[in-house]
Image (cartoon, rainbow over all chains, first blue to last red; front, top):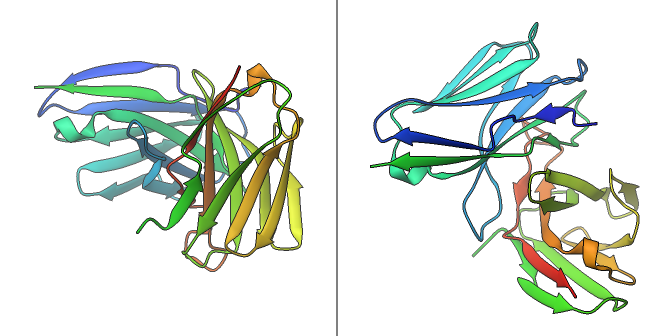
Length: 112
Length: 115
């Protein structure tokens, strides 16, 4: 049972445009959500997170939106840059458990 | 220098062999994790340890064992490797005293192939 789902295996966006990556979850106990970015031959690196008490968190070009009623979160990257080409994983945790449940990942390609 | 290191980075072995993957960290974190990544499945938790004396099974622990030799070292063993354990393995750490205790920091990964 996949509790965290990223239904788009890949996404292609033109440089300078907005990239929107989506993630859905089924477990209503999740209260903390994270996005990780992964380049080939490297480990995932933490990008941005959001607590369930918020519906938006921004960090530079990256914004995460959380819609708890829809059990949906999204990552917006504006403007998209070639260096943003990577695999993006969303992850969720609950009650300070410090255990993460990951989605399947979305491969983002930024085209010049 | 990397904060979380994994050795080896690549390993090819045969079915039935015992394999150990090692993870070391200099972040001073108390919590360590082992994940595997398979295409289309994301990262799945194998084992985790909240301190040296605490070892817990994750989602997919069958066929694996771990040892927390010190706060900074956490090793993963495959007692008798089988082909469906071919995957990318990641070690991660987190800090219970951090403002965001759920944020984990990953090593570069070990690509394991079992023939």
